[in-house]
Image (cartoon, rainbow, N blue to C red; front, side):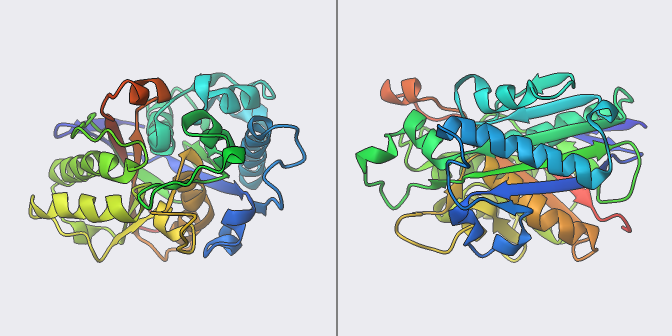
Length: 338
Protein backbone atom coordinates (compact mmCIF):
# COMPACT_ATOMS: atom_id res chain seq x y z
CA UNK A 1 0.00 0.00 0.00
CA UNK A 2 1.02 3.58 -0.62
CA UNK A 3 -0.42 6.90 0.43
CA UNK A 4 0.37 10.42 -0.62
CA UNK A 5 0.11 13.83 1.00
CA UNK A 6 -2.29 16.15 -0.79
CA UNK A 7 -2.73 19.84 -0.11
CA UNK A 8 -2.09 21.18 3.37
CA UNK A 9 -3.58 18.50 5.59
CA UNK A 10 -4.72 15.37 3.75
CA UNK A 11 -3.21 11.93 3.15
CA UNK A 12 -4.66 9.90 0.27
CA UNK A 13 -4.36 6.13 -0.05
CA UNK A 14 -3.77 4.37 -3.38
CA UNK A 15 -4.69 0.95 -1.97
CA UNK A 16 -7.34 1.89 0.51
CA UNK A 17 -7.53 0.32 4.00
CA UNK A 18 -10.75 -1.62 4.52
CA UNK A 19 -13.14 -1.10 7.42
CA UNK A 20 -13.63 -4.83 7.77
CA UNK A 21 -16.15 -4.75 10.62
CA UNK A 22 -17.81 -2.43 13.09
CA UNK A 23 -19.67 -2.89 16.36
CA UNK A 24 -21.62 -0.57 18.65
CA UNK A 25 -22.69 -1.09 22.27
CA UNK A 26 -24.89 1.44 24.08
CA UNK A 27 -26.78 2.14 27.28
CA UNK A 28 -30.54 2.18 27.85
CA UNK A 29 -31.26 5.80 26.86
CA UNK A 30 -29.34 5.40 23.60
CA UNK A 31 -31.11 2.12 22.89
CA UNK A 32 -34.50 3.80 23.21
CA UNK A 33 -33.53 6.56 20.76
CA UNK A 34 -34.16 6.79 16.99
CA UNK A 35 -31.14 4.57 16.20
CA UNK A 36 -31.87 1.90 18.78
CA UNK A 37 -32.27 -0.95 16.29
CA UNK A 38 -28.90 -0.23 14.63
CA UNK A 39 -26.76 -1.13 17.65
CA UNK A 40 -25.28 -4.56 18.27
CA UNK A 41 -25.97 -4.56 21.99
CA UNK A 42 -28.13 -2.42 24.27
CA UNK A 43 -27.67 -2.65 28.03
CA UNK A 44 -30.71 -2.26 30.26
CA UNK A 45 -28.87 -0.33 33.00
CA UNK A 46 -26.00 2.15 33.05
CA UNK A 47 -23.99 0.08 35.57
CA UNK A 48 -23.85 -2.98 33.29
CA UNK A 49 -23.66 -5.21 36.37
CA UNK A 50 -20.51 -3.47 37.61
CA UNK A 51 -19.86 -1.59 40.86
CA UNK A 52 -18.95 1.76 39.28
CA UNK A 53 -19.69 3.73 36.15
CA UNK A 54 -16.02 3.74 35.24
CA UNK A 55 -15.88 -0.06 35.33
CA UNK A 56 -19.11 -0.14 33.33
CA UNK A 57 -17.60 2.01 30.59
CA UNK A 58 -14.53 -0.19 30.32
CA UNK A 59 -16.75 -3.28 30.11
CA UNK A 60 -18.85 -1.67 27.38
CA UNK A 61 -15.72 -0.79 25.39
CA UNK A 62 -14.40 -4.34 25.76
CA UNK A 63 -17.72 -5.72 24.53
CA UNK A 64 -17.56 -3.51 21.42
CA UNK A 65 -14.01 -4.70 20.70
CA UNK A 66 -14.99 -8.36 21.14
CA UNK A 67 -17.96 -7.96 18.81
CA UNK A 68 -15.89 -6.19 16.14
CA UNK A 69 -13.32 -8.99 16.28
CA UNK A 70 -16.00 -11.68 16.06
CA UNK A 71 -17.75 -10.00 13.14
CA UNK A 72 -14.41 -9.80 11.30
CA UNK A 73 -13.75 -13.47 11.98
CA UNK A 74 -10.46 -12.64 13.69
CA UNK A 75 -8.64 -13.67 16.86
CA UNK A 76 -6.77 -11.13 18.94
CA UNK A 77 -3.52 -12.70 17.73
CA UNK A 78 -4.41 -11.53 14.20
CA UNK A 79 -4.45 -7.88 15.30
CA UNK A 80 -1.21 -5.91 15.22
CA UNK A 81 -2.31 -2.77 17.09
CA UNK A 82 -5.15 -1.66 19.34
CA UNK A 83 -5.92 2.07 19.33
CA UNK A 84 -8.45 3.39 21.83
CA UNK A 85 -9.41 6.45 23.83
CA UNK A 86 -12.11 7.90 26.06
CA UNK A 87 -12.93 10.99 28.12
CA UNK A 88 -11.76 9.97 31.56
CA UNK A 89 -8.50 11.03 33.17
CA UNK A 90 -5.55 9.01 31.89
CA UNK A 91 -8.01 7.32 29.47
CA UNK A 92 -8.61 4.67 32.13
CA UNK A 93 -11.56 3.06 30.34
CA UNK A 94 -9.33 2.26 27.38
CA UNK A 95 -6.29 1.26 29.43
CA UNK A 96 -8.26 -1.08 31.66
CA UNK A 97 -9.91 -2.55 28.57
CA UNK A 98 -6.57 -3.01 26.80
CA UNK A 99 -5.06 -5.01 29.67
CA UNK A 100 -7.47 -7.81 28.77
CA UNK A 101 -5.82 -8.29 25.36
CA UNK A 102 -2.39 -9.40 24.25
CA UNK A 103 -2.23 -6.67 21.59
CA UNK A 104 0.20 -3.71 21.32
CA UNK A 105 -1.77 -0.72 22.64
CA UNK A 106 -1.81 2.92 21.58
CA UNK A 107 -3.90 5.06 23.91
CA UNK A 108 -5.06 8.37 22.46
CA UNK A 109 -7.01 11.38 23.68
CA UNK A 110 -8.91 13.53 21.21
CA UNK A 111 -12.03 14.12 23.30
CA UNK A 112 -15.07 13.58 21.05
CA UNK A 113 -12.73 13.51 18.01
CA UNK A 114 -11.08 10.32 19.27
CA UNK A 115 -12.79 7.93 16.84
CA UNK A 116 -11.77 9.73 13.66
CA UNK A 117 -8.28 10.34 15.07
CA UNK A 118 -7.95 6.64 15.82
CA UNK A 119 -9.23 5.61 12.40
CA UNK A 120 -6.78 8.02 10.80
CA UNK A 121 -3.82 6.66 12.76
CA UNK A 122 -4.93 3.10 12.14
CA UNK A 123 -5.15 3.81 8.41
CA UNK A 124 -1.58 5.12 8.44
CA UNK A 125 -0.39 1.92 10.11
CA UNK A 126 -2.22 -0.30 7.63
CA UNK A 127 -1.39 1.90 4.65
CA UNK A 128 2.26 2.08 5.66
CA UNK A 129 2.42 -1.73 5.81
CA UNK A 130 3.13 -1.71 9.53
CA UNK A 131 -0.01 -3.71 10.28
CA UNK A 132 -2.33 -6.27 8.75
CA UNK A 133 -5.20 -5.44 11.07
CA UNK A 134 -5.77 -2.60 13.51
CA UNK A 135 -8.56 -2.34 16.07
CA UNK A 136 -9.86 1.17 16.79
CA UNK A 137 -12.28 1.84 19.63
CA UNK A 138 -13.73 4.74 21.59
CA UNK A 139 -16.21 5.12 24.45
CA UNK A 140 -17.92 7.46 26.89
CA UNK A 141 -20.31 7.06 29.81
CA UNK A 142 -22.75 9.76 30.87
CA UNK A 143 -22.46 9.32 34.62
CA UNK A 144 -18.68 8.87 34.66
CA UNK A 145 -18.15 11.96 32.48
CA UNK A 146 -20.58 14.07 34.52
CA UNK A 147 -18.69 13.21 37.68
CA UNK A 148 -15.38 14.24 36.14
CA UNK A 149 -16.30 17.30 34.08
CA UNK A 150 -19.35 18.77 35.85
CA UNK A 151 -21.18 17.45 38.92
CA UNK A 152 -22.04 13.95 40.19
CA UNK A 153 -25.47 12.97 38.92
CA UNK A 154 -26.67 12.62 42.53
CA UNK A 155 -26.24 16.37 42.89
CA UNK A 156 -29.10 16.97 40.44
CA UNK A 157 -27.42 19.92 38.72
CA UNK A 158 -29.67 21.49 36.07
CA UNK A 159 -27.76 22.01 32.86
CA UNK A 160 -28.54 24.93 30.50
CA UNK A 161 -30.26 24.29 27.13
CA UNK A 162 -26.90 24.66 25.37
CA UNK A 163 -25.53 21.67 27.27
CA UNK A 164 -25.19 18.24 25.65
CA UNK A 165 -25.85 14.76 27.03
CA UNK A 166 -22.73 12.60 27.16
CA UNK A 167 -23.59 9.30 25.50
CA UNK A 168 -23.24 6.00 27.30
CA UNK A 169 -21.88 4.21 24.26
CA UNK A 170 -18.89 2.53 22.67
CA UNK A 171 -17.90 1.82 19.09
CA UNK A 172 -15.15 -0.29 17.56
CA UNK A 173 -13.93 -0.99 14.03
CA UNK A 174 -11.39 -3.35 12.50
CA UNK A 175 -9.20 -1.87 9.77
CA UNK A 176 -7.43 -4.24 7.43
CA UNK A 177 -5.12 -4.31 4.44
CA UNK A 178 -7.58 -6.53 2.65
CA UNK A 179 -11.10 -7.83 2.95
CA UNK A 180 -14.65 -6.87 2.09
CA UNK A 181 -16.22 -3.64 3.29
CA UNK A 182 -16.09 0.15 3.05
CA UNK A 183 -12.66 1.60 2.35
CA UNK A 184 -10.84 4.64 3.69
CA UNK A 185 -9.68 6.78 0.78
CA UNK A 186 -8.22 9.73 2.68
CA UNK A 187 -7.65 11.29 6.09
CA UNK A 188 -7.51 15.01 6.86
CA UNK A 189 -5.84 15.90 10.15
CA UNK A 190 -7.30 19.03 11.73
CA UNK A 191 -5.66 22.06 13.27
CA UNK A 192 -6.55 23.24 16.76
CA UNK A 193 -9.01 26.13 16.66
CA UNK A 194 -9.91 28.45 19.55
CA UNK A 195 -12.50 31.19 19.09
CA UNK A 196 -12.49 32.19 22.74
CA UNK A 197 -15.51 30.21 23.97
CA UNK A 198 -15.18 29.67 27.72
CA UNK A 199 -18.54 28.07 28.54
CA UNK A 200 -18.08 24.29 29.03
CA UNK A 201 -21.84 23.85 28.72
CA UNK A 202 -21.75 25.12 25.13
CA UNK A 203 -19.24 22.79 23.52
CA UNK A 204 -21.09 22.86 20.20
CA UNK A 205 -20.22 26.51 19.65
CA UNK A 206 -16.64 25.86 20.76
CA UNK A 207 -16.15 22.93 18.35
CA UNK A 208 -17.90 24.41 15.31
CA UNK A 209 -14.83 26.37 14.09
CA UNK A 210 -12.72 23.20 14.14
CA UNK A 211 -15.36 21.36 12.14
CA UNK A 212 -15.68 24.13 9.56
CA UNK A 213 -11.92 24.51 9.15
CA UNK A 214 -11.31 20.78 8.66
CA UNK A 215 -14.19 20.35 6.18
CA UNK A 216 -12.98 23.37 4.22
CA UNK A 217 -9.37 22.12 4.13
CA UNK A 218 -10.48 18.64 3.12
CA UNK A 219 -12.54 19.91 0.20
CA UNK A 220 -9.70 22.22 -0.87
CA UNK A 221 -7.08 19.46 -0.62
CA UNK A 222 -9.22 16.97 -2.56
CA UNK A 223 -10.48 19.56 -5.10
CA UNK A 224 -14.06 18.52 -4.34
CA UNK A 225 -17.46 20.01 -3.69
CA UNK A 226 -19.91 19.01 -0.94
CA UNK A 227 -22.09 17.23 -3.49
CA UNK A 228 -19.27 14.71 -4.01
CA UNK A 229 -20.41 13.22 -0.69
CA UNK A 230 -23.65 11.52 0.22
CA UNK A 231 -23.19 12.38 3.88
CA UNK A 232 -21.00 14.60 6.03
CA UNK A 233 -21.34 13.22 9.56
CA UNK A 234 -20.11 15.42 12.38
CA UNK A 235 -19.79 14.39 15.97
CA UNK A 236 -20.71 15.96 18.18
CA UNK A 237 -21.74 19.52 17.46
CA UNK A 238 -25.30 19.14 18.67
CA UNK A 239 -28.07 21.40 17.44
CA UNK A 240 -26.34 24.67 18.25
CA UNK A 241 -22.90 23.74 16.98
CA UNK A 242 -24.34 22.30 13.77
CA UNK A 243 -25.96 25.64 12.93
CA UNK A 244 -22.78 27.56 13.76
CA UNK A 245 -20.59 25.16 11.78
CA UNK A 246 -22.75 25.41 8.67
CA UNK A 247 -22.81 29.20 8.96
CA UNK A 248 -19.02 29.35 9.14
CA UNK A 249 -18.77 27.18 6.03
CA UNK A 250 -21.27 29.33 4.16
CA UNK A 251 -18.96 32.29 4.73
CA UNK A 252 -16.38 30.32 2.74
CA UNK A 253 -18.92 29.60 -0.01
CA UNK A 254 -19.54 26.01 1.07
CA UNK A 255 -23.12 24.84 1.62
CA UNK A 256 -23.59 21.43 3.24
CA UNK A 257 -27.12 21.79 4.63
CA UNK A 258 -28.62 18.99 2.53
CA UNK A 259 -25.96 16.37 3.28
CA UNK A 260 -24.91 17.20 6.84
CA UNK A 261 -26.01 15.19 9.87
CA UNK A 262 -24.67 15.32 13.41
CA UNK A 263 -24.31 12.19 15.50
CA UNK A 264 -25.29 14.09 18.63
CA UNK A 265 -28.53 15.24 17.02
CA UNK A 266 -29.68 11.94 15.52
CA UNK A 267 -28.76 9.73 18.52
CA UNK A 268 -31.58 10.99 20.76
CA UNK A 269 -35.14 12.21 20.55
CA UNK A 270 -35.27 15.91 21.50
CA UNK A 271 -35.91 16.49 25.19
CA UNK A 272 -35.07 19.14 27.80
CA UNK A 273 -32.87 16.62 29.62
CA UNK A 274 -30.79 15.87 26.52
CA UNK A 275 -30.48 19.58 25.78
CA UNK A 276 -28.73 20.46 22.53
CA UNK A 277 -27.99 16.82 21.68
CA UNK A 278 -25.50 14.08 22.46
CA UNK A 279 -21.74 14.23 22.93
CA UNK A 280 -18.85 12.11 24.14
CA UNK A 281 -16.29 9.81 22.53
CA UNK A 282 -18.87 7.06 22.26
CA UNK A 283 -21.51 9.16 20.53
CA UNK A 284 -20.08 9.44 17.01
CA UNK A 285 -18.27 6.10 17.46
CA UNK A 286 -21.53 4.23 18.08
CA UNK A 287 -23.47 6.11 15.38
CA UNK A 288 -20.81 5.33 12.78
CA UNK A 289 -20.26 1.72 13.87
CA UNK A 290 -23.95 1.01 14.34
CA UNK A 291 -25.65 2.86 11.50
CA UNK A 292 -23.34 4.45 8.95
CA UNK A 293 -20.95 1.53 8.49
CA UNK A 294 -23.87 -0.74 7.56
CA UNK A 295 -25.20 1.82 5.08
CA UNK A 296 -21.79 2.08 3.45
CA UNK A 297 -21.41 -1.70 3.42
CA UNK A 298 -24.79 -2.12 1.75
CA UNK A 299 -24.09 0.64 -0.79
CA UNK A 300 -26.78 3.04 0.47
CA UNK A 301 -24.00 5.61 0.74
CA UNK A 302 -21.22 5.77 -1.84
CA UNK A 303 -18.98 8.26 -0.03
CA UNK A 304 -19.16 9.56 3.55
CA UNK A 305 -17.02 12.17 5.27
CA UNK A 306 -16.74 11.37 8.97
CA UNK A 307 -15.71 14.51 10.86
CA UNK A 308 -15.45 13.94 14.60
CA UNK A 309 -14.91 17.06 16.69
CA UNK A 310 -13.26 17.31 20.08
CA UNK A 311 -13.19 19.96 22.82
CA UNK A 312 -9.68 19.76 24.27
CA UNK A 313 -10.44 21.32 27.64
CA UNK A 314 -10.19 20.04 31.19
CA UNK A 315 -12.07 20.85 34.41
CA UNK A 316 -8.98 22.61 35.75
CA UNK A 317 -8.55 24.82 32.69
CA UNK A 318 -12.23 25.77 32.68
CA UNK A 319 -12.16 26.61 36.39
CA UNK A 320 -9.23 28.92 35.65
CA UNK A 321 -11.27 30.72 32.99
CA UNK A 322 -9.35 29.40 29.99
CA UNK A 323 -11.03 29.22 26.60
CA UNK A 324 -11.72 25.86 24.98
CA UNK A 325 -9.40 24.77 22.12
CA UNK A 326 -10.98 22.30 19.72
CA UNK A 327 -9.96 20.05 16.84
CA UNK A 328 -11.68 17.98 14.15
CA UNK A 329 -10.31 15.17 12.00
CA UNK A 330 -11.96 13.98 8.78
CA UNK A 331 -11.99 10.45 7.36
CA UNK A 332 -13.34 9.96 3.84
CA UNK A 333 -14.88 6.51 3.43
CA UNK A 334 -16.27 4.94 0.27
CA UNK A 335 -18.51 1.92 -0.16
CA UNK A 336 -16.88 -1.33 -1.19
CA UNK A 337 -18.29 -1.17 -4.73
CA UNK A 338 -17.47 2.51 -5.30
